[in-house]
Image (cartoon, protein in one colour):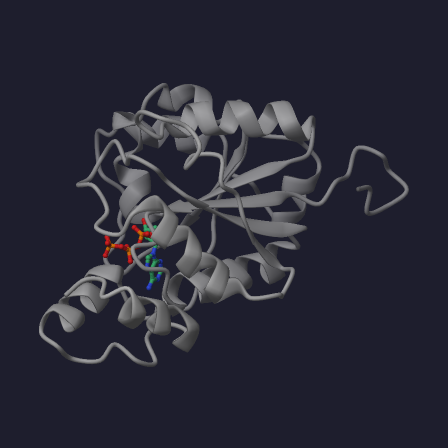
Amino acid sequence: MAISGNKNIQRPIGIFGGTFDPVHFGHLRLALELKQFLGLAEVRLLPCHVPPHREAPIATPEQRLLMLKAALGDQSELTIDERELKRDGFSYMFDTLTSLRRDLGTTPLCLIIGSDAFIGLPEWHRWQELIELCHIIVMPRPGWKRIEKSPLNEWMDSRQAISPEALSHSSAGLIIFNEVTQLDISATKIRDLLKKGESPRYLLPDSVLSIIIEQELYK
Ligand code: ATP
């Protein structure tokens, strides 16, 4: 969709991958803030099937999807992209972005990742090619700092966007750092509370908590 008279300007789509085991207000708040601040057309929450860089989720793909759907309800700013759940094997971001690019043509894509994940980017499958498929939005997490002698440094310095507007002018190729409100919430914390028999209420939507209780998850 063109947002000005210039047909080369398109509102980008944000892609936010995670295990969402379960989805919580930390995820939802940052997705909404980035959508608003960067003028994204939508942010797609993309649950991964088999994460290549961490242990397997506890809830099944179906349960994680059910919780995401319950969390998003009928609002239209945040959406769900189910493509990784439908693909067997490791959920490599390179494959996901290639598939998104095939569907979305030249629409700018913004991959949203925390600075913790960004530091580990050189371990990702075909990491140097990711930037040909999308822009990368890095959310600095507490304690974030540049790691000296990382292959990331030169790679990132030559691609930094000067302003969010630049993201709409090309399909891929830029990196931007964008602060979001730091809510001290993690899925690990929620699972730990449930394991101890304590309530995680107010850290995640009530609709998600109802599913967790009904399906006796994370006990
Ligand atoms: P876990 O505790 O199981 O590792 P998580 O809460 O970090 O889960 P993920 O599904 O792994 O959730 O989230 C995907 C990404 O979301 C993470 O890489 C992280 O950068 C980001 N994220 C998660 N929680 C927050 C938060 N409270 N504030 C900002 N970013 C967050």
